[in-house]
Each structure stands twice: as structure tokens, then as C-alpha cells.
Image 1 (cartoon, helix red, strand yellow):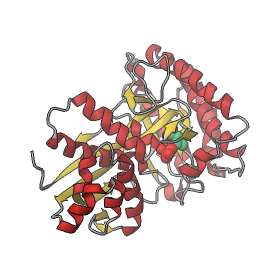
Image 2 (tube, protein in one colour):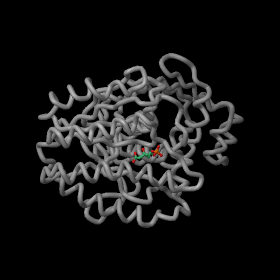
Image 3 (cartoon, protein in one colour):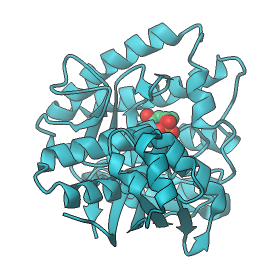
Length: 365
Ligand code: PMV
């Protein structure tokens, strides 16, 4: 098959880790396994337009003995990136680095010029990272090119390789291909798990976790204080790193059990502890950071008080920032939504929040 020009569009979700990935080694491999809920409302939609390059004799000659990286740095290799219709040359470098990293796995990409058109369902400056959904959407578009060139590729291989490619763009993006729960990182108790790509959590998920809600409270929409690259590097030579990696391995076993048996108490204690541990790692590294804001703590304290008072199963988790993800089961949505609206929204920047829930993975459009 000759793929001269055309386009593919994929919509890929964001995800929220329950057991956190924090600490990595080259090439973008996790120091510990992590597990996440795939989200539904928060997503990126990306169209990859491709056009086979007319090669000048000069370039053909160059490519015959040049490495992939060299051909990428040629002026002839064109990538234009549009976010919500606006040209974003500042994103180009990140994308070129990504394409160079995956070049050996999908060598055909060096023959094409690209236009990438992307849109996030959540506001750009919301403090919600778009790297997981963005990188997985792009990886899936590239896999659609591969599938067009090699129709024999199985669905299983298609998604595995998409996750593999996405991982090389942003580690947590490996968990943004499928749903409702994805494990990334080798763990003996999780069948087929790998450091190289995410796998669907295969145990029978208890009914209590179906349609689980995640209301994201946007406490601080500012630029991230610590980029995740800097953050992961803080785990090198961190005094508590080894204990942390061991703890994450244990928590994967405990949470897997809770997800199967529907033990919400265990689920909550692991999820909240993981969030606070992630932040503790940042507070105890050098340099050290406090990424929570006073309103983050207000929200956490109110969630604890409400849970105690009402015996509901509302709980929180955090990403590497001040925003709070409020998690609760579908059967408690009326009570929890009322509480969130009446008591928690006041702590959000401009009262801004996003109602999301567990989703089922990416879709081709
Ligand atoms: O995918 P990265 O490199 O942006 O790392 C993300 C790490 C956390 O979001 C803080 C935790 C996680 O497991 O998603």
C-alpha cells in the first residue's frame, strides 16, 4: 500500500493515577508500576495530516546513508502544529524530539511532512496536563498510518504499540490508550504487565467501581511549578526513593484486591496515601517543593470531615500540582455532588471545576 497523503484523527483520554508513577530511568521506563483510572470528559482530539515528501535527488542521496535523526533535522522535514486553529511553533521541538525517539519503531515517518491539529476538551491553562492525552492521541494517529501500510497488524499489537510509542512521549501517556483501568510497569502479580507499555487491568472489576466519578477542582490554574521531567529526576538520589518504590509495588497488590472485592475502605486509604506520598516525595527532595495551596488543604480537610459525618466513600487524589481530584462511587453521586457544589467549589479558582468519570479509552474519529 502506498500512503501518499491523507489524515487520521483520534480522540484520546486523560487519566488519573491511583498508585503514582514518580521516578524514571532511561529510556522513559518507570521505577515502579502505577495504575490509573482512564478519564472520559478530559481528552485531546488530534488530526495528523501527512503528505509524502517529494524527494530531491540530493535528499534521496543523503537519506541512503544518513541516519534517521539526520533526515529529521533537514529543513525539508516539515511539521506544523495547530492548537485550536492557532499555529504553535513553540511545540515543534517537543514533537520533533518525540518523533526522533520513536523513529526506529516507525521508520516510515521520516518520509512524510506533517500538520498536527489538536484540541483539548479542557482549557489550556487549567493546570490539567495535556501530555498524557496529547501524546496518546498522536501515537494512535501514527499507528493508523502503520496499519494502513501494514494491514495485517492485529488489534492487540496496534494498541500495545500505540501505548509503547505514547510512553516515549510522556510516561503516563502509556496509560491513556485503553480503559477503564490501566497498569503500566512490570509487577509480578499483574499478568502481562510491562515497563514498556500499559496493560488493561484484567481482574473482574467490582460493580462499585463502574462509572466511578472524578470531579476535578481547579484550585490553581497557573503554570506548573515543577515540570514532570524535573520532578522524576528528583527521585534520583532521593533519600526515601527505594522505600517509596517498594511501597508502590505493595500498593499495586492491595489496590488490585480492593478493585476486585469492592473494598472501598482499602481503596480510599491507598489512593489518599499515594497522593500525599507523591507530594511528600517533592517536599523531601533537593530542591524541595510544596505544590499544594492553602485551598488544597481546605478541600482535603472538608472531604475528611464530610466522609466522617456521612459515612460516604468520597476521597481525593492529587497530581503534581494544587488541583484536587474528588473521587466517589456512582451510587453516592447525589450526596457527593451536593457537598461538592455547596462546600468545595468556593475553593476553586474562579469557581472552576470539571465533572469527569471513568472512561473506556481512545476512539478513532
Ligand atoms: O507522564 P509524566 O512524565 O508527565 O509524569 C506524570 C506523573 C504523575 O502525573 C505525577 C503521576 C502519574 O502516575 O500520572
